[in-house]
Image (cartoon, rainbow, N blue to C red; front, side, top):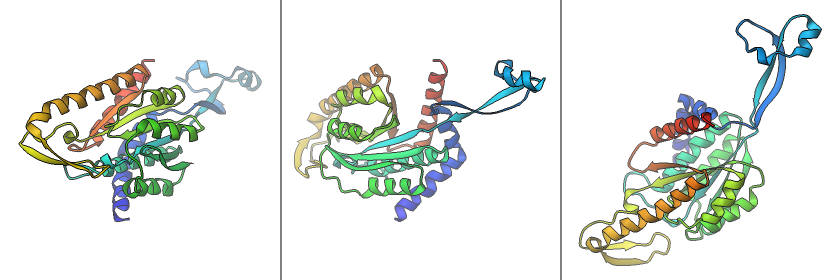
Length: 285
């Protein structure tokens, strides 16, 4: 609970410092809803004049609108064994919890609903969308401590979560994407939802120690193996980069955004730059 509380304090401070505004400017609601009319003032856009009210009142009146958000933000978080790794001061799973908390608190600040699914090779846990602080705290606690029962299979996990997610959502898929075989489920997700791949990346996922024999342990099965880092480092890195490039190519083809968060660096800068890029891209449409 101390760790959950620390994440809450850290992320809510960042929300207060401007992340909520960045979030609001990027993730729009369903449209604009009529609110009221008011007298015309010099400089107002004449296209907003309500001509019926103007005719009745004998002076110009403007229509005013408010944004109709009714937005659902959904965190699909990979909690398989590979997230229990970090070559620096933070595990990938801890970093995933912190990013999910920051985005969720920003969503709630903007009166949006937040839901989540924890997945491995199946649906581990489903949290229905709500506008409550306790929802975010439970999400953080579950990401940190939920004992995953399955291995990495994002295709199966995403497919199971999509079957339960009935309303359209801004869908963040938070994973290290060591499993890149999810073309079909990504297509299904992109057809209905606004999808963002949020990649938690640790350099040692693709970089083996370039030394003599080293002992490696599979984070999901617990099996160990003695391998030659010198012999396998280059081929392992090349294979990982090819798999990752294929996943990102699929995402681009489907119009899915991608954000990389590195365990070695602060995440706020990349997150804000991602918001700026996304806002700029949307403004050109």
